[in-house]
Image (cartoon, rainbow, N blue to C red; front, side):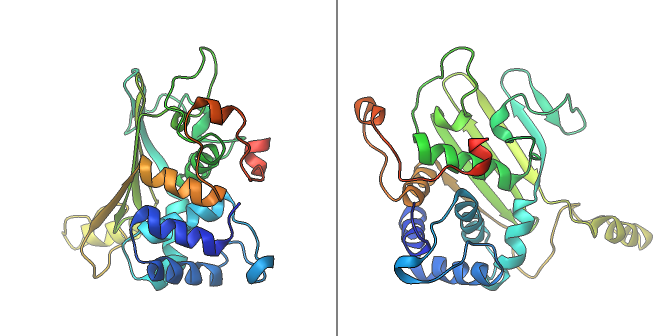
Length: 253
């Protein structure tokens, strides 16, 4: 696996952002204990999917870089508020019918939160890449290992995110939102003043709202950076492919 310096370079290339931007966000996150820390140089620790997810969220959330220590944990804790697919499944939005039917949305009973889902996605992409083919019947392979299109967006303010996963037969739309604990008090005060309630999940600030979106090419570039090497081309090369990667505890369970 890659060390932080290589991961920073990989993010800059994959997301087309200046290396200094990624480096500054990473520095803030190291101080906030959101990245694996250790000695510098050859003895620096290897990064894991959680590190990759945290750095991705820190770079994508369009806010002052010094606020990454607050924004990243909120995004990681953003709850799955709706999950819809073209197979007649509708979770959330007041019509919940139980948890999402695909195990890749959570591992080993972990909650359906944005950080958990992105950790699992990057873990699978590191191991298997974008196979772009349907799994064998009866298997429960992760959706993103055979997706034909993936897009992921983060919206500020509000600590919200949207994840779209398309394959040749299944289309999913997952929405995540951080449950602002201050909202009930703020809403009650607004109603008492006769004002229109602000958005229930908005983290209000002086900045204009913005949305940043990336696709499967950028996610694959991040996975390549985390793996420390590019994904092989073609099925023949994939058969013998052994990524330089230590299994994440949740994935190995």
